[in-house]
Image 1: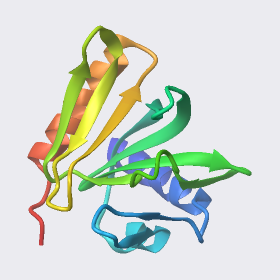
Image 2: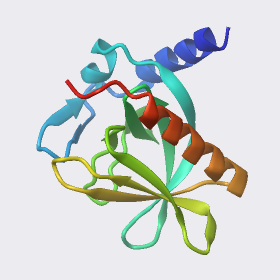
Image 3: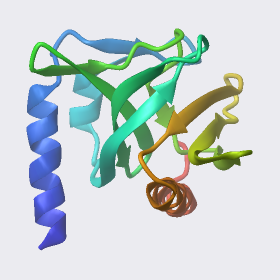
Image 4: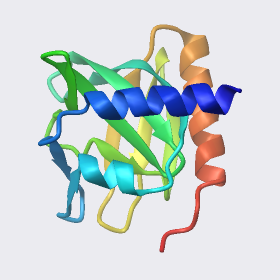
Length: 150
């Protein structure tokens, strides 16, 4: 089934994530690869997107929508590492995550994380309007069915 394929893909991606990579969350906690493995997380959706940096450049990113977080990875030496862009966390909790269209930019979306640790905004672009809408819809669905914070 589709779930098996997704799980298979998720395991392959996990295997490619550099063991030492980590990202700092908004609340100061360090999030490591190991944290991704210990949870009952499933891959809902994935794809290549472009993260717009503060300087207006675009970084190629592998975005993974999991049951409770959105994850941004970048490729480095055939491995994946947590994306390092503008010192922003590359793991975003789906709790209080809002997706908004970027005005006059049909392939762009703002992801606004309104978490208690402080708001953070990400500008993500896709290859097409359809793809952007697809991501927004899937994020919305995942946020609505996301397990409550412990």
